[in-house]
Image 1 (cartoon, helix red, strand yellow):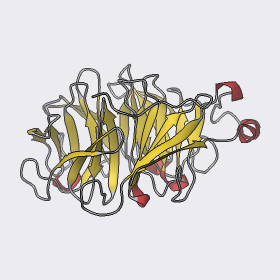
Image 2 (tube, helix red, strand yellow; image 1 turned 120 degrees about the horizontal axis):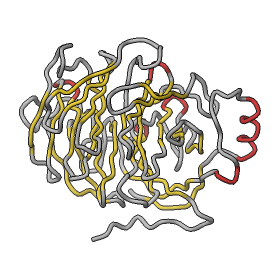
Image 3 (cartoon, rainbow, N blue to C red; image 1 turned 60 degrees about the vertical axis):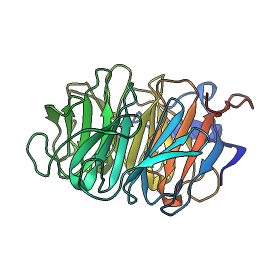
Length: 333
């Protein structure tokens, strides 16, 4: 059942002032005048295998008037309108074309093609916007173009596809038809090294952001894999993480991070300056239980943020709050 109410969820201004004094340059914080606030808008989903139900939904990606969800243990992709009304789904358990074995994550390119990380089949599958199978690539292994634990995919402005591998601790880059181009990363904690890497996202300038889960940090790279900067340490203060899992980028190149162990979303500028946070532990509106994926449509300016609240088997939607004025989420027909 979907619900709609107004609940402002943010980090308090007083807390921000204190944290700014306590932190010693490890993370920048915006001023009170710049701080953004988000309000709870709606939610949908429950645990199960029926339409609109989830079993370990791992990722959410809004595109235009639709919201795509990778329903991990149900081995399918579900599609909703932006109000949460079920539209369609595709996929079943198996290893044939169009079948799925653990729907880990998905991303949608500017043409509406969907790239699914089919985790336990060690491959990426590409579908058109209607769910028709287009192509696939990947097999189990450690060679170029192979995977041991593919986790998340992202697409740049040229249509190239980047895939993280948690066990190989690397990022592989492909054409949109699966031709291997390059890779970077190795196990470790030095700049450019990765540990239990999870999500990946690309900004409007084709910079690459990686959720370096095991190192509790975000790393930023060029599209050719050159290290640019990093931010984050282990902890629960502003700018710290306890397992950064999901990533999203908005039309202003702000970076959204699901801080899984802290049950919150943290939002930063593209250089790692903290903006605000959403959420707290729990099951009430605006609270999270092990959030995984986060999605913002970079091709629109709705201000809507979609969160895969995995432990609560639901999708939650938040809106940038402007002095009591909300953005309608009724889709354009």
